[in-house]
Image 1 (cartoon, chains in turn orange, brown):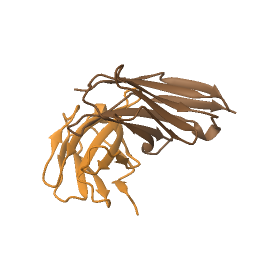
Image 2 (cartoon, one colour; image 1 turned 120 degrees about the vertical axis):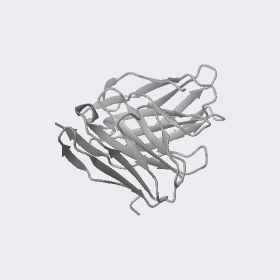
Image 3 (cartoon, chains in turn blue, brown; image 1 turned 90 degrees about the horizontal axis):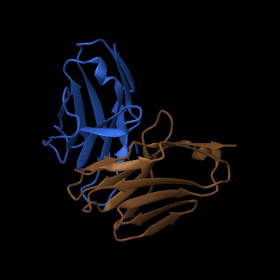
Image 4 (cartoon, one colour; image 1 turned 90 degrees about the vertical axis):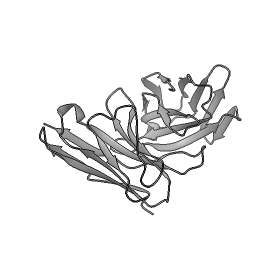
Length: 113
Length: 111
């Protein structure tokens, strides 16, 4: 049982390049989230989804887009990468019930030069 | 929105001593408070959680307390071991399902 799988694990981009981060879950959870983690700032929510075909903005959505075409996948896109987007990105999921914890992937470490 | 503050940002304890990490939240509607442990190179993993209708919960060496009136909750780790060294995050959840995280506490247990 893989849980939450993020690909790729590491990536180096040049400023202006684009890329897509993939989050896949096998727990049939309705909710999926993308966070970024920067030193001293904890986890900041970028975008989230409450179900297939839905997305919503979080705290820091600028420069990112997302899609949830299938329930088990949540994609995070950077159309034109900037050095400020250098970070560790985490995907998380949780079921629809209100008092259940999130399950996290192991992160994607992204460096933008 | 919710605001979660976590203290201290770093904590060093001797092996066998206790460690306490405190969080405060602002939204009285929050009703679920998980604690996560994050080891180097890994994603956060749930270690204990508490719901608003409970004041305290224990799981072996780990306990969490919740004071709804004061809007604060704390993580207590007793008899600390080197493998407890990690970053710990608290979180609070609004009724609308979004989680808000503290900024983390880096715990070092000195053998």
